Image (tube, rainbow, N blue to C red):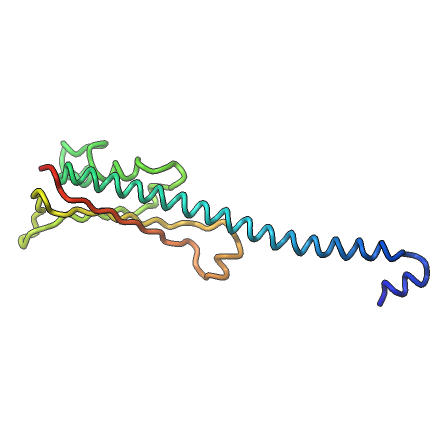
Length: 161
């Protein structure tokens, strides 16, 4: 309405109003594009973090398969860092993961009396959980969660005593 009135007065040509329309369309398109790109960046970070967690769980499970008596440093003097599964899990992945925020659960089979069984052929497993913070401001509001708890699991069979 105002554009037509201004045109009649000769203050603004038709090309000027079209330029304004293009600017509004560009702005709306740019906002949508930025939301998509930031979502893709979060998706890439999620994948990279998951691979690092998976690597840490796999490394710890493999170490437990060879040395099942050393799940962590508290298991004895022979299990001091770096000779335990928990240390191996925390140092196998990338520097992008805050390894102090991870929860590492190590499962070793136990008998009826509650003693650990270190027999060849028994399964051992490692589960790592991590609270992943999303950077995109819109997705956490839509999903209603931030941080997302990521979890990975690895298991092996004891091959050494």
